[in-house]
Amino acid sequence: MTPPEASLDTRGNTPPAVSSCHPVNVLRHRADFLRAARALRRGTDGMLVQARQRDDDDPTIRVGYTCSKKIGNAVARNRAKRRLRAVVAEALLPGAQPGWDYVLVGRPGVTIDRDFLALKRDLAYALRKIHAQA
Image (cartoon, rainbow, N blue to C red; front, top):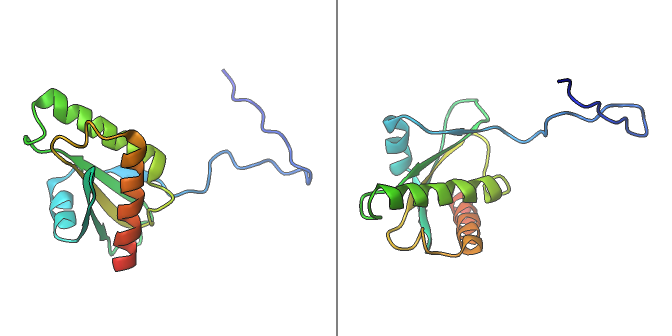
């Protein structure tokens, strides 16, 4: 299957196939989570956001998700992490800065039950406060 042809703009140039936003990767290593835990943090009603600026020249935004056993059993923890991933997919890029690591920590009894729009507002608020503090 061949990709569709891009339409030409008024000047005859083809538009870029990929947007110019910075790529987002997922944190996987324990050491990255521990470094973020020692850095800036902002608690909201729906989650705790930990953030740190990396000192490398990589513009990638990295995000990690964690939920303790206080959230509940494995099903509840996975649901909370899925909700956090969905919030990040919709609300992270406007407030995130390149070269930063963010860890979202679920809160017991709140992350699962909180309204999705409220979770998005919580993330936007936490990012504004973290970057104003930095």
